[in-house]
Length: 279
Image: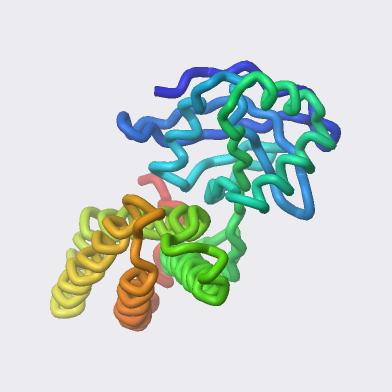
């Protein structure tokens, strides 16, 4: 279980500190730690240093299990996907961190473990950040899911293009984005089944067949999602060809599912205010 860590060394860019909230790998509860950060080539970087301890800090284990994190920085709070860098990219980014905050070189010298450099990737979205109706909120979530799915597919194709150098397994970057996508999709479907669909059904009984079909599609997409997560249990032995085939199958089924849902639910939800108005 993560504990509140000591702040990392003062950094040369920005205020030097952000607050990172992860979800406990075992507890499922949120945990917040203050961390030093470095901006490099448009990327936001943190280091799982723990001042050169021989063990990774708890928050690092959390983000490996649940990659979607919350970042508070410069008065802004946003979600990001935490992606540890690997190989030559990790070496390049760690060198950039040391140039900005030389104290991390001392941390690395104290331990034999390679200090993980984590990119906090804030996914771009075409949906407006501020929405005023439940239809807009649903579309915003769907846009995020589509963006993440495209991201995973692009990374998978890049992995195949460099398969000789990449080796037989899948990359950690693919794993993190895929887990983030799958976990977000599961949460979205649970929210729909538990709250959204029953609420709409009370006022629109004519949509009963639509909801029955959507629930069935949730089950079908969930099976593919579980298969993807199982393949990612060990990225060093995951079969990229099998993963690619499952990813293509999910892409096809999920895209059709989202399109159908939007066709039937957006007109109904267009008049419902968001956030909900308290009675």
